[in-house]
Length: 290
Image (cartoon, rainbow, N blue to C red; front, side, top):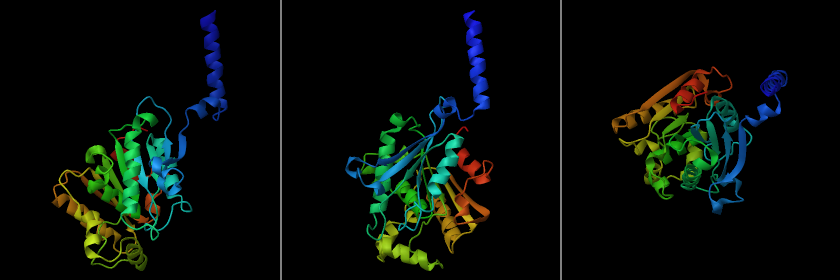
């Protein structure tokens, strides 16, 4: 009689799940969010040097991690815009772990503080991969706008990660959405961009060159997915195309560049729809299994 009793219990339990989708069972398998994890012991108590970690429901396999860096021209947080949380809430449903990395803001903190904060956060994530259960071999760095600049710079200029003892091949790939790559452009850009660059980096041509991902291409660069919007801010699409070409010219073997028709600087990063074509491309790039 015991097997029959167990069958009845399981049948009743499954019926409860159908009737009550927000049951304890569903809660136990729901994504988890861990907030305000410090970049390091010395960063404790400083929210600008912390990250939030979104972990997908346990599928029995280690998920890839997307370490996402917000934009705001290095001057603004993402607290009001919530671009990062919206992206994380969607991608975690596709089986992707997402870390939302914060950094100290200009003009109070000037370059290279922002890149150093990103590198410190990434080093902590590499170190704690087993602790949180994501795949240490599939850690991707990503960013939007100024975050795209920081992701590309830290991913290409290996000195930032080397300071933390992290090998440059620890990054499985880079996703840059409407990023900035040449900080001393010869083409027309917006006044806001010019002011933000000056407030963050200054005017010294040598420093601007050193801080530009455009000048750090290398043959062993990680795979790149470079995304721009058809209706982006002035100069962004040209900057993206030049950056992709520069990477290929230095011998980088995996460089994908996409321009999203109909999108602007902000809508391009909205992955609200499950069948959003760019969301599918990003999930595929990460090798995730929704």
